Length: 133
Image (cartoon, rainbow, N blue to C red; front, side, top):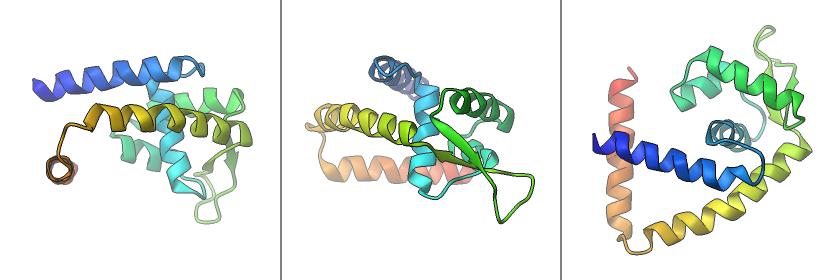
């Protein structure tokens, strides 16, 4: 229950931070995955990274493409699975989101020792690996 509560609080904070840019935390997560991929990522790749269904991610990317934040590019590795890339406007939004999120994250964890944060992250990653198989 604690993890569900934490997730709900993080989603609410994400929605609050992204609202000024006309986004939801769901769209923010997609932008984040695409930005960190650097050279595009497929919709199934985004879905895997977020633990979401491909169909749900496809709906979000389609809207974001219409909004000019994402573009679909040919994928040299796979003819039917295009790459999702940030447009210049999408990169600007991602940069603006980071400008809000980074100070919030630092502020929110400044009283937590770094080794505790690292241990928590390792545990979360281990559980993701275990349940994702």
